[in-house]
Image (cartoon, rainbow, N blue to C red; front, side, top):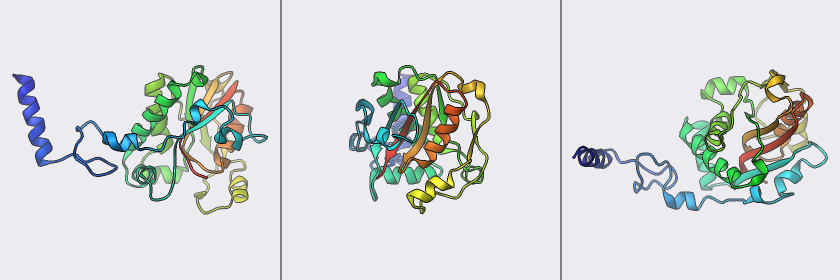
Length: 233
């Protein structure tokens, strides 16, 4: 009887205040869902997680000793992934980051390559930008991954010593030059002799991840892997 009343109450609430899909706007989903089944199904998976020497790993050849690297989805203009990333980074929708993290974590869980990850580290965000946004989107994603992999997250192990401008409008060479000396490992014991999974939202040139990854390896990490939600050429 109680469950029946709760069902009718939820149905009435949903009718008065419909819960819409963050992707297509449909209301054919439960209050716990952020995206409808159709939108989740149509997210453009890369399948990089199951491919050795994939395009993400090749980005770091000769630049950074990465054990494995992957991105869950392709990022293109005017796409669902772009829309969701905009919600996460500029509209305060942290739930998108949690969902992306869980979807990425599920892909990692299905690949034996990431079984021995010891710790997850989100890429540190520009301090001013994090204060303005209220959170670091990479940290939200990292915690979503951790909930699936059952691995610890340490958002304080690496910090930004220099607050750089956004990389969006810089050339590839400018991006690498911009990252010199930006990151510092604040807690060596947190990563020493461990397989570190470095997490970010999007990978383009890989310059920022490279700069951060170098510091992690120089601080004594046994190995480094990289995972991002999206990849854009």
